[in-house]
Length: 121
Image (cartoon, rainbow, N blue to C red; front, side):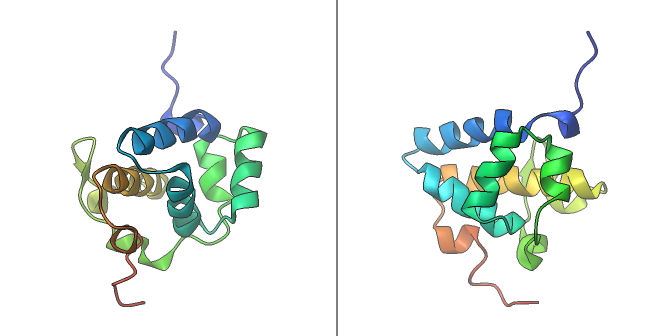
């Protein structure tokens, strides 16, 4: 059986994994939603609609209303790769989200996760 591309995976299948990872570390679904909305520009209703429609990751990110300008400040390693060095724009966006959820699960403060102490571009 051929391996499905990460881009083809449904956001609705990955979203509960983000929530589980956060909740295992005493963080909340609301915090996960806040991070996703901050990064992508979706409001909570738009996020729910994406989940309900079962869009794949490529569609989820391509339909994102406004990718946050401070996303480029997200740095570090996810799956053994530095996110700031990922050439493919879609893969970089996916790994940005993975990195933010990792930071949440590690107990980082929301204002740090959301790069609120950074200068606006």
